[in-house]
Image (cartoon, rainbow, N blue to C red; front, side, top):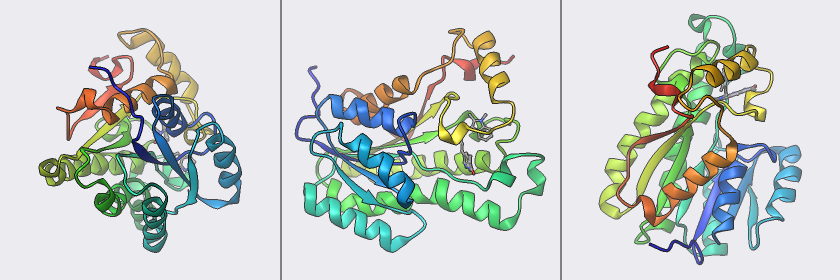
Length: 257
Ligand code: IMJ
């Protein structure tokens, strides 16, 4: 099968800078001809996202704080006006307060728990609902990003692990809802990558070393490898796959030690 994304459109939520996994996803999709909408939060992100969007012909850039329903509404209204339809959603959004990503999990505050879930898990459902009218009848694909900390205990990942478990469960329920309409929903569980979301995490270096030592492929993964998996999940090549989590982790998750 010859694949092309020419004439298709997508929205990417979660690009912060050139090192973002979301940017690698965008690059892979744009390379095959997809026209993209990028979203950002705040002025600092706007600058760097606009600079990156320049590299993607025909792309647009929109503000979208996923905790604000009216902002999500406005984002998809603008996408509808600009593109008329939507084939792919890439959800690469997560946030927990810094103090929740260190020490023991049992210290997690109610506010910290709620915020992490609102931004990192509920937002997939909130975004999917608004994307739906634009995706109807086009056999589209929704892709979100997860991490092994959602199924195993990873030191310091804490409340984000609980949120990723909720995110992956959301993928299954959304896939069941949307399958009859031809829309697929999947997650990519990516191995650790040096991004803004991984900066300042204590023990990150030794984690990369451990993966190099223990993973079947004896190496870490790159954001580009996640980007190309996102391309696969967005294309007709993956037309029989929905509701699942694909591990792009050099095989690390299969090991018992
Ligand atoms: C994040 C925290 C603890 C351990 C971690 C991570 N490991 C990895 C990550 C081992 C790989 C990165 N990751 C998979 C994430 O999902 C990160 C989410 C995140 C990161 C931050 C940092 C800055 C901040 N809030 C955050 N919220 C979510 O203030």
